[in-house]
Length: 463
Image (cartoon, rainbow, N blue to C red; front, side):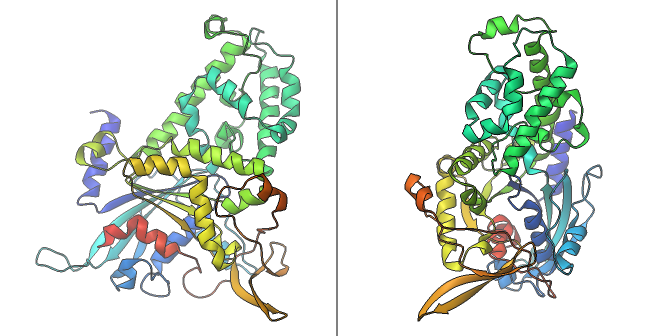
């Protein structure tokens, strides 16, 4: 029996009567995936005790008994570093968990009392929740599967805006002297690919999101391997696909195309097949406020990256046949993270902006009858809401501590409810700064609307 089908059959048996759920926590770099996963595990472990999960039905009704970490199914994948993340938050002063550097998994066994009783209903039931974490940079490669080397090169060249063009100046200078039919020089290709990777890293630091190949940003064990020594080739408009395919194997074009194809088939496709194709539910985390801070070019870049990314996932209702052969994600949440970086009355506006940012993917999902819901949340709170009275006027404010330890009391600004236009960027006056986590207290981590997100993602399985 084929290996993939065997694995699917095992998954199906394990799921028996919907007692297993696999959740994909998706988001680009710095969207808050590690914080979200840490908080999710922490909230469920404290369920029924110190956790505040009033918006999760099973918890509100007193039926959620708690959760424990158990051995994961794939013993070859590292365990999500929950203990290290929780320890960082408990330090004095507290610090944010380290960002993801590789793939990790974690399995929770959630125990609850079913909502209705009967002679066939057990007193207690269990739901196995599999969680999956991975570097956000690697997600950027999923849309790359829709291309061959020629179309990918042209798309990448078209996507380079004015700001990124400056960051890629060294790479552009080298490309000016390189032709598709030149003989490939290994050392030179390696040097040019490093110039390209350096430009991508500079773009990421400047707030850009739509960057490929993602492994150039976080290569892991592939650092220095020839599979990461390729780049989009310029000067292809005067070449037809036929003349390019006729070039010898030793040419620059043929060498780069071969490496691109290897990257697709040996790096990107296995990553997608092994992990994403079997998920039941998904939450997409978006750092909308960070994009607003970075300016119009970065904001538009984030919109394009998210639209292309969501086209890479497979959505649809689950059935016996689909579980075996064409698994689908059957429920989706999208969440604007770091909601505690704006005052509470701005949260509704933040959700509206998120829905506008993902308008096209949301239209397609709703047309396909896929349940989807938008949230604003803070997985781990870093601020407290306050009010400032000045000259008889009350103004909402946030109280927190900067990353460098300075106490802050400020009003960050208003969030637009629709996609910003040129006039908005000309007059915008906000500063959604960075904060330390709040000091540790007994019990579960403080949050904003993690319970609402949990109710949407797993609440129907706890009835």
